[in-house]
Image (cartoon, rainbow, N blue to C red; front, side, top):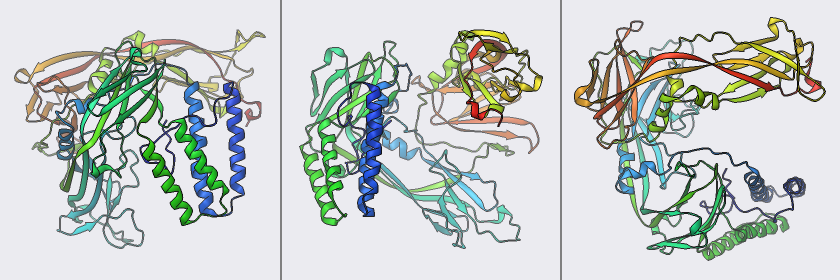
Length: 609
């Protein structure tokens, strides 16, 4: 939960609660709602559109900030673990080595679309940078053109044009999960059937990339003993102001000036992480990155805006000058970071941008085609000159030893009664590696279910006799659907047993020189005989001599024909493997999860609709 204030430098995020604290959370909530209503009313009185937009943006952000602070302060402390945000950097000797790996590991995949007039291009990046806050280093990537097989160059345009009669290259509008995907669109001619193979195909994608690596990164490890103390390393310093149960307050600074290359660049110079008593990283729940003085400054700017009759260039210039003058006085930065769980140790990582390395590169990337299923007998190479590790693999593979008790404890029960004719009870659990190996041969067995009324004290009372069509149990999806309109009495409890499924997984480890028959390493690829190792029962993970799991790039299946059996599969990795781990599902067990659910009540007005 990070909210960015307008009119601030891009490095600022959430701020402290404005206006002080009310005696109770209920009063704070009422005060917030009243303040919101008053602000919306004051907006209506502003006639100048530009001024109105500016007031709405800053005032709305301040109210959103207060709402976020209220939510963070009232969030129950429930432990939730996350990943080490800096794990990827720890594999490389310097920030610049990470940048080089990022650039040299980038390639482009050709992907067929469902339409004969579309071809999708998927840039594949070696790293996933969705760490809390932002990507570690300032970066920019822009696509410029695509070269087709007939040597024609199509310029990139930011959106597809309905009036452009030619071939177009634009961002893909259909793929929300991969926002970097591009689409080559061919002209559509009414009544003319087009053979897609006859169209000029994309062979290379051009672009430019820039990444700025900091001079270094330094980590301060802190505990409650460090509260009130300032720790320093060269020009970097951090002060631990407070370490509470689930949040920490710090101040940090770099006494060296920013490198000239990044003085006007949005930066994220700090990454704060926390561990609990188990030593595991806690996931973050939010951050407050501005002091009370900074909030007072933005409140003052808002008040100045609200006193204006109209927006003017002179007023805008004054606001900018005031902001720059204020920011010049801020020699230290503040951060209050919330975590999901009780903090034992705090890790404050500071990135030193007093000197930087700027890497600019023009890209001319070949478009590679790796269909998930191919009838080609030759193994296509995909060797990239980088090594990338999968830091999530070890955690993911813990699911191979998931026990019946662990599975039951992970179940969460949710209800939906928005539609009384299709009220639902859902039995969910976090997806694990065990789920990946369940296969399709399910035998749910019995799913007994009885609905009960309640007595005057709210306790479970007698069972309700129901026709079979009143409810349906779907064990494979873990749902119960029931129609309240078919109940002669209002149900208050549901009691029964929901089948869960648990795979028994056998793990084996092999050296590259001692692989079993049907498994073979070829460079950075693992070739699998799918007759001996059918895909539904087996999974493969590789390591190099560092002991880290290698990240898999992609996998393909080589089939006898379009409808024929799979012959062999190929798994490609970022780097040549030297060790192999195999995971085989040897059995599938049905686990009965007994439950008693207190049912939510439907609104009376909704019944009978």
